[in-house]
Length: 112
Image (cartoon, one colour):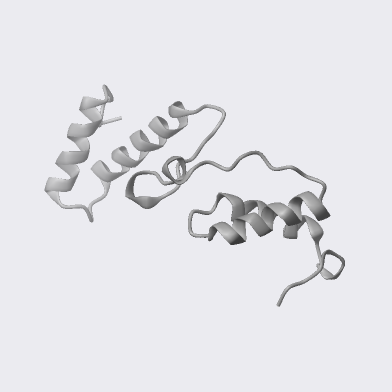
C-alpha cells in the first residue's frame, strides 16, 4: 500500500526510508529511481549520488561502514573482535590461536 506524504504518521521516517532505498544494494534500479523522484518532489531534496554496488558491498557481502574516523574505527573494531575471540571459551583452540596470530600480525598484544 502506497501512502502519500500527508497520511504518513511521521514524514521524517518516510524520508529516511527513501534515502535508505537509494543506498540498499538489494533494491532494484527502478525503485531507486522512484525514491529519488519522491525525495526531489516531496521533500525538495537532491540526494548525493549513492555509492556504486562495488563500493557498497564489503567483504562477506555486508556494507562497508563509513565514519569520520575512516579506517581507524574499522581497525579498532577488528582488534576488539579478535581480542574477544582469544578469550571466548566457546571458540576452538585453533580459532583462538588464529585470532591471537592475527593480533600479533597487527602489532597488538593479545593478552591485554
